[in-house]
Image 1 (cartoon, helix red, strand yellow):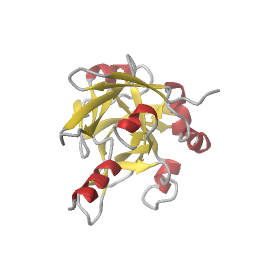
Image 2: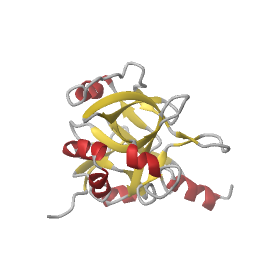
Image 3: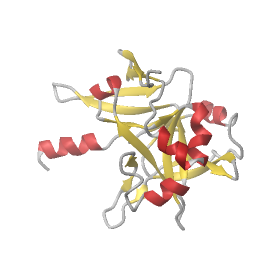
Length: 214
């Protein structure tokens, strides 16, 4: 694959790893019912791993352990991201967007930036002292339900690292995302209030101001 084509492909794919720990799971126990996270992967979570997911059930927010990534039929691998710009239109995603929205809690997620020397620097993205709630959708499958994470165009200093970022929900908007399609559409245009960036292993800290001016 030519270098330019490979670079373009790498920049289209993002949010391919996030971090989950027991402390974060215990925080989820405070806001959701039927917490089932013992089978979920902790530490670094990759596509095809089992992860804790929040979903709606008769007006309640409950948890389930699902596999990360829709099956890419005939292509191998999994589809671990869906774009907010097209999720309501693509046949693979549109029904699940209408009926099967979910939330993926995480302590942080990672992204990499290539330096001028050709090396890759790893960055952590997180909210200080808070859980990140990543918006997603899930698909019912006889072999086990699967989820994918929604992404949007990057803003603020995230643009310095990647051109995409996860759609991150504020805690007060979780039930809106799960139970109201009308509200979910609005939330795809909302910006997460704050996000911190840290170069892995120390170094730079910067805050993303991603909320609309009111």
